[in-house]
Amino acid sequence: MINLRLYTPRLILRKPVWEDTLLIHKLHSLPETDLYNTLGIPQQLDDTQKIVQEWIAAYQESSISHFTFVIESQDTYAFIGLIAIQLGPPKYKIGEVWYKLHPDHWRKGFATEALQTILNFGFRELKLHRIEAGCAVDNLASARVLEKAGMQREGRKRKVLPLKSGWSDNYTYAILEEDVV
Image (cartoon, rainbow, N blue to C red; front, side, top):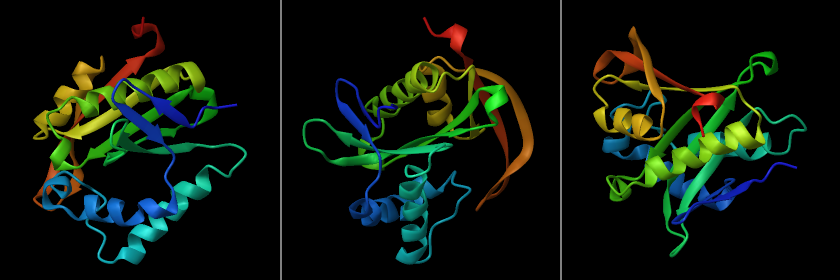
């Protein structure tokens, strides 16, 4: 049985519930979080409701391939953001992570703490061999988070991200199960 509630010293990572929809919509709608977002700002709350419904439904499947977690404070249960891991084909034992935190919670170490927890979850619970991530080359804060969590920059994809500002290059990062002590 896979644990669907993860804890860090300061955070709880839990599966989303329907009541999180408005907070998630607000997170996606902030200009600061939309800067490097390829999803685009949801125009209507209905758009966010469809996304959240897909995340909730994924946990009902017998073979889960996408784990999205709400990040909240252990002390106050305040909504901090989202983090997820998407599994690739089982043969490759690979996953890809992404995260998005509310700007009120930036520069406090929450992203690194949540990411390290998801990496441990991926290697220990999901038995992955490799976990990847990417970030726009101008997203220096996200690159620092990935590196602090132990991920290594492996390359650069040219003009692969369709951002509002135009096509952006993307850094690719990865960590292997053998890199985690």
